[in-house]
Length: 278
Image 1 (cartoon, rainbow, N blue to C red):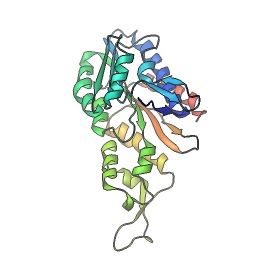
Image 2: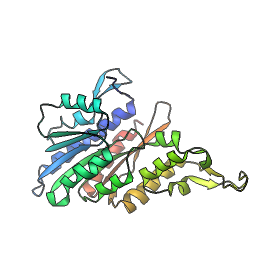
Image 3: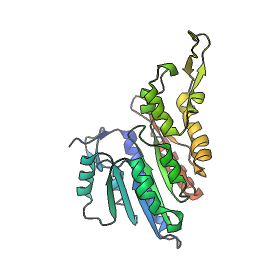
Image 4: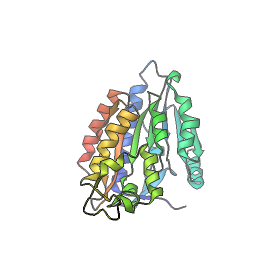
């Protein structure tokens, strides 16, 4: 089957997650209260990619997580693509503590996985929310945050947003695309953050709104403070890394959110190390 090609920015993302996963399990194995630590990849893909830079095969986050020095006690991999889950199953068939799910990540996370990892279970999950676009629902983020023990890496898909939702003027945006944005953010307040009324352009009584300057930066700051912190309730959120393509175009913010200050400190150090490459 066709294997996704990824750019250098995605290779850096994989390195960031792998590096933190190593630190995560190294710490958790020495915590007497912890009865297990789970790795969740909610948009796992088939487990391998091809580097655009070198043309070589690169292991994806599901396989990287299996190779760290102190393994997780359980792994949960989800993808909506049946063919991808089949390939991933073949690549990991000899590992007993893996469960692979085929279907909508939002439903499977909320109904089948997160209930197994509540505070009472004394398990600590690390969850990778790396959707292909605006496929993640806000209710899923909130459900994860309510565990109070989970730590998440979140891909905030600017490319999908800018291409399909955040047009120069809000009136030209497709209502279905606006609904996708609302579902991801859990609010339509982003419209007030990113658009302002242009009185000179208002026609026929319509309110004509145009996108503000530095819209991506303002959107990221709003999502961090108002959504992840205030609305979802995460206590510690790192300043996100802005990933760009080879031409400098914004692709996504990589967020980290946790209820644990130590996790944030470690991720901040990792993020700072890689910012110079972006």
